[in-house]
Image (tube, rainbow, N blue to C red; front, side, top):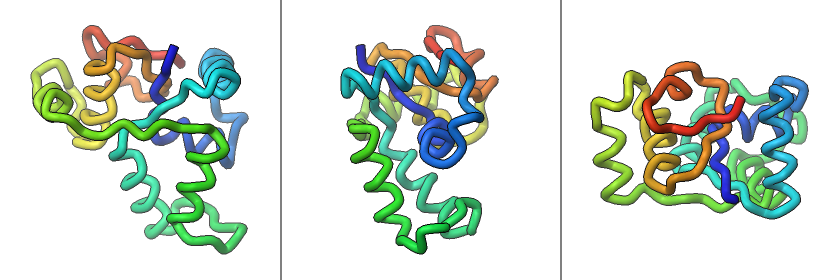
Length: 133
């Protein structure tokens, strides 16, 4: 079964795997084995923004594009685009979250009817959203 990774899950996996909870790590490992991991396309923008702000340690001296592409390739991530349904869901009252990117990530999981790996408590409290953490 395909599973969506929240942005921080991609970053934890790449740079600080010890920050993943045991259930999150198990879900990522299953997804890696079956090449069934995905992310919302807004996660790519979030990573680029964090990279530009110096919030991601650039030990290798590579560009944000290379960093993002390395994660996508290493995890065999499928990037899921925003659709009209996802855009509408993200604006619904189901989300208490104020962050538009997080709303889009949650809406992507809801629209595809697949679980989201996330530590975000507000997303995990979203009705109907199956979360792993």
